[in-house]
Amino acid sequence: MKPVVVTGDLICDEWVEGRVDRISPEGPVPVLLEDRPRRTSAGGAGFVARCVGALGGRPLVVGVVGGDVCGAELVNEIGDFVAVDYKRVTPTKTRFTSGGHPVLRVDREQTDWLSEADEIWAVDVLRNVIPGAAAVVVSDYAKGTITPLVAQTVAREAALAGVPVVVDTKPSRFRLYKRATVMKPNDREMREICPGLPGGVDGLITGAQFLVSEGVAGSVVVTMGEDGALVYPSGGQPFVTASPRVPVSDVTGAGDVFAAALGVCLGAGRPLSEAARYACAASAESVRYHGTHAPSRTQTWALGTLSPEVVDKLA
Image 1 (tube, rainbow, N blue to C red):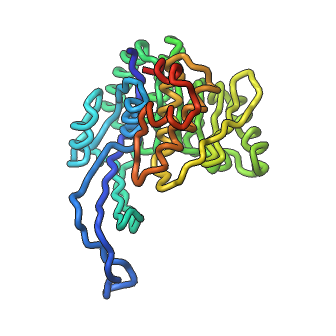
Image 2: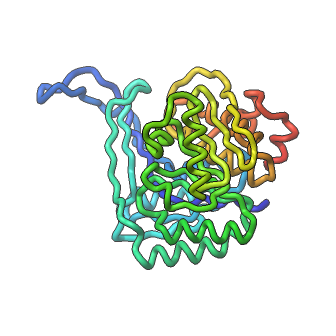
Image 3: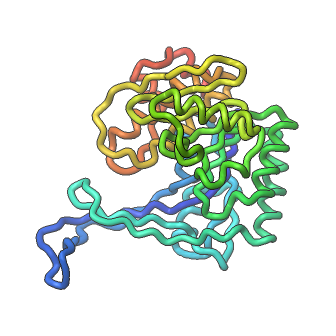
């Protein structure tokens, strides 16, 4: 099976769980009594890769972490092509929770571009792995991994090899990208990219037209939470794909799940309409759980959006 290359910002998701019984006498803040061991897992591009694997693909990660404890944990979890830069800090999101409810989130991060040495390494690896890939998913959290040169390398190598590229990036960075197969903003991000858009789906269609006209991507998929996704396909008519109705526990990571599912489907040669349905089902399944959850092919199929035969072909 050809791999789905996942490149971008590797983030350490950390959870500290406990109970809150009182308010601090030092100020109007809750006192969290930690009662469970600290746990970590791969976030950002690392979580996208985990989702690719759960959904039937074979992930191959290209990224950089810092020379710290969180970076070492990510290397142990991910492996693949992960470089360690001892001058960088691994982006970390520490979530303090009680009874499944968030109390506080503390972020540690470094957003400088990669060093020249790290950039050269990343470009060299991508040049070698993209020609043999089924698809590429770029998970750009604006933490410095996706430099202009890295973005250009992904676009060039994927175009030469005919490999589909899914880009999930922050609004401030969309102009880094050219000729992506699919750009995947959410509703809020699209309206940040194009201020003043009309409300509703019509406004999102206008925004998608703008991204396509700027050469950023051939197609655009705008996620709309429980309302599904607007699909603006290359050379076709826009349409909305519905999302399965599920009880929502936590939306953390739903966008990453969506991007991973798009990459798996497009990498398997499925049309964008089918990929969007699968991605809506996968992200809907993920929000039923507290914390980040990588849904399996079986869980996603159970929501009834694709036939078992189609889902089996993703493996």
